[in-house]
Image (cartoon, rainbow, N blue to C red; front, side, top):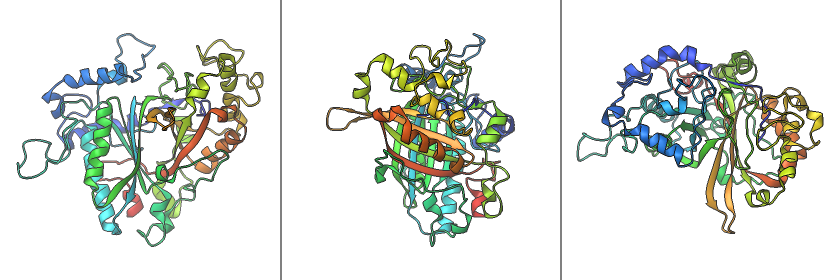
Length: 443
């Protein structure tokens, strides 16, 4: 929930990935930079579907600059898959999420390596707007198709696929990786107030699928699960909508399910200095951990909001709890959202005050959270809240000290509860068509 845990956000991949966009397109048989793909030739109705998804509840933020500029969410274009860092971290945040954690079922290291290679090749195609394998139609009638087909005719919708490796993958007597577990990949402690469901926590692998069309994101996870059949199985998954953080400061700041603007001070995708300092693993990755250079660490937390209680809370109390006004998002005593907050003017337990870097010895993380609603809890209350995703250079110096502070003191704790948790080492990007997810870890 920490809206002020970062400084500004970033799209650092664009420079290094510009060349790889052409590589993906060439390898996949389409134009990854946004030109007609095989799907788009089948029908440009995908543009209407993407807009329809936004109108049905998505958050398509309007740019505040040149009116001739087409907002990224409306372009339907492809995000380059190849690059120094994985896409889906500093990239402009899309409107929809399908996040899945997997348990690895095979005990064979070679099978796991082949699965990662197969997933990489499939991800290259899907992010370029192409079907997996030999397409969803036109194959042998007696055989199942290579692709399930629900994304045919849809644009790439800025799909990004980001993989991570959980602590359990490095367990002894599994895949010979116990000596390659990075020191920063620690098991998260039990924080005050946590009520974690083991069935919605942990995982050997994770894949974060983000897109502006929910069907494109769901299709991507479905294909990877299908390819992994017998070798990896979905442990838990989470759908998300209405991004609650942005890496593009020029766009309108999104709002969370409590109605407040969220992520005002998030790291910007263009702020390479902040990314290098707070997000990307660099020279600290040495020896057996060197494979993480250029990667990051992801903390995923399913945070349930007690919506019904919050909805009966007076407006002034809500604003005091956050430390910002609800309309503009301005900090206490200020008039504009992006005015520098005067922390001492806020209540001692205000969320913004406690989450601010100045209250946490400079701790800064990059957030890519999403709202969720998963029906009701059987008592007529919405099962809704925030699926919190945070990237950082070192979990021990990022999320852990920040959450220790928030879990003990934040006034917002009366209205939220952490019910799911996971941590993953996110390897560096796939450099070219001969590279694959996690290659440096396994070679």
